[in-house]
Length: 277
Image (cartoon, rainbow, N blue to C red):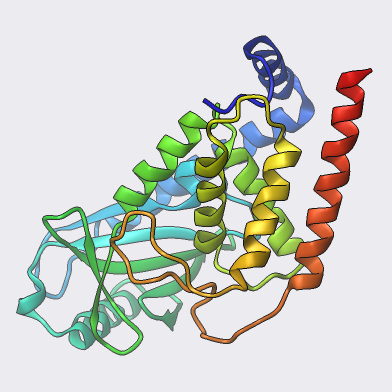
């Protein structure tokens, strides 16, 4: 089990965090989002599909992992439609759901396959993705080429939760720090891509019990640099190699990444010297 500090130190840090002003603000923000989520659920669950089938709302992504960053993160919502993918073509499925939302429910939509971007709830951007649930824990969504693609958000969430537990419950906190860096530096790399690299970093160092946050961050940025932002393998072997971004444009952020490697290397070395003293 990865433990950057002892159990007592970790518990004390958590208590201090909860008692701090930051903790209070976080609590208020989370409460606000719970209210908004309730509003979303109530509105979306009233939707009738064009086949008059039942629909199930499912919130996925950062809001479930407490890595949601207000003003930056999208709220990811699946609308699960109860039918088989051979009952309808991907293009018709997508177009008819869009028509329903625009005409019957007056949503202001921006088409962005596989989903729709909706900004109707207190300026929070919602990415709403219609899908069909499969028996292997997968969900069929419409790809950019109007074909069926399968995603596995539940399985990947379970995978990241296990990494989080084995990390001493710091994985999501560190992932959120990386996401903040991404937004501040305007790094156009998919958050899912970064999350997988961080998870693999933890798996590589899981046998080292006395390793600091800074050392893990350093190893993460080294791995990100070595990836050259090329597609990486899905750790669950369910998806095709995962691209760094969806537009296919090859970008270079070596300067920003190397800066982070040096920053965390210096912090880690300073911490080592402090411990020796």
